[in-house]
Each structure stands twice: as structure tokens, then as C-alpha cells.
Length: 418
Ligand SMILES: Nc1ncnc2c1ncn2[C@@H]1O[C@H](COP(=O)(O)OP(=O)(O)OP(=O)(O)O)[C@@H](O)[C@H]1O
Ligand SMILES: [Mg+2]
Image (cartoon, rainbow, N blue to C red; front, side, top):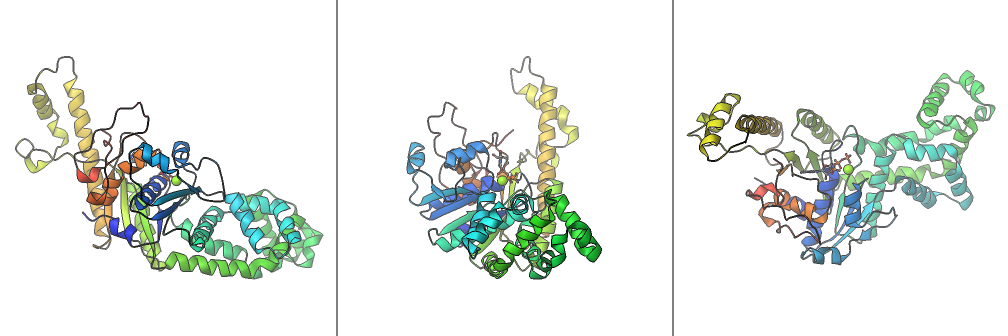
């Protein structure tokens, strides 16, 4: 099975995309940690990480600068990390404010925009705003020159494509032609005048009002007139964003689950990515249940099926002292798990047959517990990076017993969930 080791090694920017809840944040953090273990200067930009993961990476507090994970965190775990790992959590509102501050032509314009109620609502709720800021932050980290590997986690979009369409959507929204409508003289006369003058404008206002909850026309108008000096800067920024997303040093790694719905979304996503001239570089199937290789002498065909419950009960009964154990329940549970794992394997196989043969893919098992600390992130490495991965470290000061090493090379250091 190919791994994504080469992909991470050969790119400067790795973007983890995928639909909600599939494991993007965890995968991004795990890849970033691996990069640091390989001696690189790494930063991971995480989006709304689970509290414990944020704490263990030291990004519990919002900030506009990446924070370096203390080397002591690794030393305590007995890990050798010759590179460095910095982590940052996207602060969407702060990022918008900084963007405005950077491009505003004067202090007065800056203050006017930041105080504007419409702006405050827009920067928090406008569709695509979160995604736009993630890409903007990526550009800043790239331009800082301080890192040789930047791993970008992406926001939990309903559709993975929202991420890529965000720069265009925001640019269109701030397009001069649209904005002209908002700063025309009849604006100051209020709603009824605007509706009477132009039906399209009336319609647009209603939509804006619904989306932002701000109904004061004057404020909307004022926002656009204050912004009008900044459109060139925004248009130029969109170009920079496009260039970075399409650069050969940027890789897209799709994280997906083995469920029907996740895979259907993923198919659509990889097609759209191609249409937008961006290439998908690897796929991670996360939280996969592994099928047990059945003894062909016992199970003809080497697979377990629903009708095998009685046979499994017999095998269990002959295994020795099982007094008080409900063997029927055990057998049914075992068959259920096998059927679940087989279903996933078939769906993944079908999905892969539609992808390029050369596209690296890896499967990461469904671990028995959430991956919320550094040890958990290392636990993903053997699945993500194959034999190149280091051993799982010991837990720092943990009272939990160490997890058993998994038997398969690609199943990670943690014990996959039963
Ligand atoms: N292979 C795995 N085994 C067990 N738990 C996992 C695995 N991968 C991720 N998790 C857990 O699943 C949860 C969701 O993962 P994560 O936050 O990385 O998803 P996400 O795609 O970033 O979600 P969102 O779209 O909401 O941002 C987390 O609690 C994480 O610890
Ligand atoms: Mg996430």
C-alpha cells in the first residue's frame, strides 16, 4: 500500500480537506507533528480543535501568532523532535480585522469599518468568510518565510468544495459593480426609495438583511463606501490565494470516512477539484474497521457471513472454559463487526476504482478512543506514513495503561476499537 510519506516530504503546504467530522483537524495535527519529527520547521493552522487537543498543542488561547509547542512536551514523552512544531488556531474575527487594518488607506477609514455594525455581522456570518480567512492566514504564514512545512486544517463545511469557492465568492461580493449599487445617492433616502428605484437592489437588501440581521440601510451603505478604496487590494489578494492554492508545492489531501455518504461527497469533490484545475494528491480513509482474515478451512471463501453464527459459537465453546459467557451474543457481535468491515472495504474499493491508480491512499483505523493528545497523534503515524513512522511514545504522567501495539503495520500504534 502506498503511503503519503513522499507527498508530505515533497510539499511545503499540505491542505487537509473533507466534509464535517471526518478527522481533518486530527490528521492535520498528526501530519504536522510528523514533519517536526523529520526535522522540519512546521506550523499547523487548526480550526476549532477539540479542547484537549488545543491544550496539548498549547493553542488553548486565541492568538494571531503561531505558538511553538514547548520541546518539554516531547521530552516528557521520550520523543526525539529535531525540528519544531508551531500551532495556531484560526481566529476568524481577528483575522478579518487585521485584514481591514492592513488594507485601509487611513486610520479613520479603518475605524469606520471596524465600528460598522454591518461589517461586524458580515465578518462573522457571511458564507465563505471562515474559509476565506483560513486561506488568507495560509498566505500570511507562507509569506512569513518562517516555516518549511505548513499544514492547513479546513473549516467544517457542509460541502468540502465551499472551501475552494470562498475567495471567489468574497471577491464577487466585494466586486466594484455590485458595490456601486450600494453607494448610489438613493441609498441615503432609505428602503422605500431603493426598492422603488431598483428591484434588484431591493431584493439584495432583503437577502442581506436576512443573512446579517442588520437592517439599517445607512450602515450598509457606509460600509461599502468605506470599503470602496480597498477593492484593488482585495482583488490582488484573491490572485495571491489562487496562486498559492494551485502552486506545485501545495498538496491537497482528502480526509474521508468509509461510509456511503462520505464517499459519495468525496467523489463529487474530487471531480470539482479537477474542474477547478487543482489536483487531489492523496486520500485518507479515516476510522476504518478492519476485517478479520478468516481461516478458509473453517469459513469457505475466507469470509464470515451471517449464517456462520452457529459455527462461531461452536468454535468458542470448544475453546475452553466459557462458563457464564453468552457465546451467542459474542458470535452475533463478531459477525456484525465483520459485515461492517466488509461493507466499508467494498465501498472503499469501489471508490478507488474511480480514482487515478497512482493516487496514494491510506486507511487509518478507528481507534478505541479519541485522538486528543500528542501520543494519540503519533498513534496515527504508522497508518499515515507506514514503516517510516516512529514508535508511539509513552504517555506523559498518564495514569492510563499503555495501549497495546497493534499487530498490523498500517493499523497505528493505538489499539483499533473493537
Ligand atoms: N482514527 C480515529 N480513531 C478514533 N477517533 C478519531 C479518529 N480520527 C478522529 N477521531 C476523533 O473524531 C473526532 C472528530 O475528529 P476531527 O475533529 O479531527 O474531525 P474534523 O473533520 O476536523 O471535524 P470538523 O469538520 O467538525 O472540524 C475527534 O474527537 C477525534 O479525536
Ligand atoms: Mg476540525
